[in-house]
Structure formats: structure tokens, C-alpha cells
Length: 620
Image 1 (cartoon, rainbow, N blue to C red):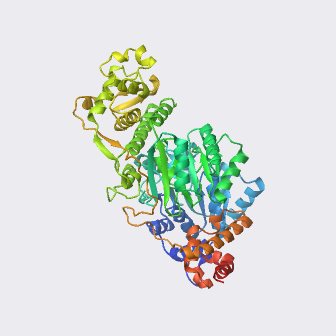
Image 2: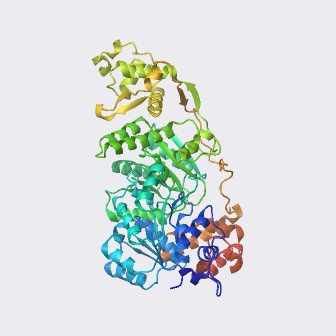
């Protein structure tokens, strides 16, 4: 059976990766390590690929599937992503299908028939379906080009999204040892990478690790004061009319936040596991297919959402780890355009996450690792330095500059002050009150507030009563957060979130440890201009001039109608960047249109004449 790519090659020419990249996907060149990965897998090699969201992971297995004999099997837990990727491949003329729980028996049987007949280039399979005896037997009878295990971090118990069914994927290496395997993920620290390699039988295989940097994303973390009001101001002032995702920890908070945004005139929809399945599906479809919709969700939402024009991701609660934060914020700006990752954070977030860890049924080792991951995230939230450098450093990547120019701390550097005395007062207060009380009580004692509890326990008679009147409650909360982030204090969930001293607090109390505390610059706002990152200007792209606005509007209206007719998301028809390229170049011939990135042979065949008609009408 010839390799599928033979269908896409010019008559008489052997297919090669670059020609197929251009003819099928309409792309003129590879990015980063894509070419090396494609060559390695096409030649039969196994590998692990770590590449940020929007970095082009899909091509790393889609192209080898077309270049090798047989069908590429893509293992993914994400039904929404399977659906959208298959729709996009079909638009490009690739024979692709899914095999998951959404299919009827007859539909699944037809997919199986096509696989055995050699009529599929790519087949997307859910892990639980793949591991059934029926599916394994089916694959044993088919010609398989490769196995791609997407979202490979799900195999790790230390990862932020562990899925037990992924453990069984070790069977792939055992049953199909001669078929190349490529594991792909956007997020994995060193511990997670090692487990992926072990579980999926990739020992000795190369790892292709791209930069974790997303220079188009602006990171901003603000002190939580009135989070709903802060969120509404952020969206209204910075992202009015944009698509975005807001993450909340609880279902009730999701619904309250969505309702509050809607009342403020922001089109917002809730999404969580407690909603009726039809409501969830309807809200997700509106978010994907309509412009400017904000989805408010628990972390159950977003995995597998391939929408490229999400302009912001906001967190109203602290995620569990830097991996989770990176994965969730990475859903913004997949198209490379400027986007925001905004989070409101406070001391209660640390206490809440710590309580969830302590009350979990995990082993002591699991709890210890989880606490370490939480501590790293808190340190990111409290750092006075470049957030991007701190984020990259967590994944073992060294930043090339101490300032990225595209995070809140770099754009509006916080002031630092010597906080040794304030830290000593706070730690002394916690110690002298018996390390049995939370933040609010300690602040009451420090500022000399005669509350019922203060007098009940006789804390108004202590030497620390009133010694902190020079700072207000807001400032003391900031001191507490930063001492927790530095590891000198910890919240004990078993003692009603009492703040307790750690071993390192001894050095602070003795004056041996330097303490520098950050102060938020008063009244500053992050500029919304497009800035340069530490890696230079953001990735070049075709920008439409103001005079092209009517043509852009016409192209988007045409795309919306095509998407409605074909029942697919608009970006599956053509990405925004492709429409921008058309608006900027204003092609008048099919050959000129074919030169626009994103216009492959099939899309030129399907839409070429219509697109030229839209351009000509705009010039009339």
C-alpha cells in the first residue's frame, strides 16, 4: 500500500515533507524543531515532544502519518479536540476520522471498515476505546503508520491532569514494538517527563524540547481585593468584545461570575460538570463558533479547545501548580497575536489549596509533591522579578534576559523595601499567640484592635499588641502572603488555618536572614500597547491596514457563512491569520491566493473563486 502522501505529490515526483506541508496545509516552511521531528518519526523513530500550545505539535504526527505507509493512530482524551482536528483535516483533503463514544454502532463500524480497507490517513481514538480487546485486535489487522499519544502528561501521577486510563497505554509498546511512537505535551516538568518515558516505553528515544516561552502572552497577577469588580474592569478596559476564558474553583462561583458579567453587558456563559450535558455542549459550541463570547468555567473546560483567537485567560482562584497555570493560560493566543493571562490572588487562595491537599486521600509522597508544586506557584505570584523568567525557570529553561518586557513586573516594576522588622513583628506575633490563629487575628493584634477574640485570649496584654500600627490591614496581608511564599510561615489546615512558623523563621527572628518585601506601585496600569519581548518583537504576521477593514469584515462574513453551512468552527475553514494575509495582499489570481499561508491545494480548489470574488467586490 503506498504512503498516503503519494496522493498529494505532483505526478512523477516522490512526496517529501516540505511539499506535503505546502500542498496539504498551505504552509511555506517548518517552524522550530518540526522538520527534525517529522524526519525522525517518518524514518521510524520514537520520541517525546514538548512544545508550547500553538507551537505546531499536531503537524509533528500528522505529516509523518501522511508520509509513512498506513494510518496514523492518534490517542487523545479530548473529544472536542478530536472533532475539530478531524474537521480541519477533512477541509485540507486528508482522510481522517474519530473512534470514540460519540459514534453510533453503525458509524463506528464504518470507521473500522475504512481503517482495514486502507482508506484512512489519520484516526483519532480515545484511550479507553483503544485499550478494548476489540480495538486492539482491529489495530493488529490494520496497517499502522505510527502511534501519537497526545496530552502525554496525563500518564503521570505527578502531572496536573493525571488520567488512570493513560497508564494502560504501555500496551502499545508491548503489542506494536515496530510501530513508531510519538508522545506529545505542552506541559511537563522533569519528574513528569521521566514518567512519560517510562510508562510509554520511550527509553533511549530522543526528547525534542522547544522553548516554553509564549512571548505573545502578557502575564499579570494582581492582589485580590474585589475580584468580581476587578475582573469586570479588566475585561471592559482591556478586552472588550474579545473571546476569553475565566477559571473559577467552584461551580457556584462559575455561575455567579457568569451572571455578574452578563449583567455588566459582557456575553458570558457558565461551564462546569454539574450542568446538564446539553447545556454544556450548547455553551461550548457558542464559545467556539461565535465571536466575543466569554466562558466562565471550572478546569473541566478548555482541554482540547483548539480555538486560536482566545484573547485572554483569567483566574479568579489559584490553580494547583505552575503546570496547571501554564496549561490553562496557554489556551490564550494560539494564533500568536497579543493576549493576556490575568489572575487575582490572595492569602485565602493559598489556604484553600493547602487545605485541599491536606484533606485529599493521596499518599504522603503525593501530598509532599503537591505542596512543593503549590509553593512554586505562590512564589511565582509573589515574585518581584520577571514572571516569564520565573515561569521558564520552573521548566528548566534559562531566560536570556532578566526582563521580558511583557509581564506586569517588567512593565510596572514593583518597589522593594527592607521588610526585616515587619517580618520579625509578624513572626513574633504568631509565636507569642501560640501559633493557633489565622491571618485576621494576627493583624488585629498587630494593629492594636480590641476585638472580642483578642481580649478573650488576653492578647491585648502581649508585648506585640499594637506594635504594627504603622501598617494597615492591606499591607499586613501582603507581608503574610510574602512570608508564606518565602517559606517562613505556613498555613496549617488541621488547626483551622493557623499560621505557624517554619524552621527558616528562626533566621528571620535572629536578624540573620534578609527580607525584601514588594510593594505594589500605586495607581499603575499595564499599558495595552503591543510591546517587544526579550526575544524581540512578537512573531511577524500580515497586518491589515485600516483601509483593509471593509475587506476584512467581508472575508469574516464570508467565512462565517461557510462555517455555518459546513457546521464547523470558523477557524476550521480559515484561520484569522490567513484572512489577514488575504486582506493585506489583495490577491487577484488563484496563483497569488495560493501563496497566502494557510491556503493549501484543497482549500484553493474549494474556496479560491469565492475568495477572489470577495476581494474583487471590495475593490469595486
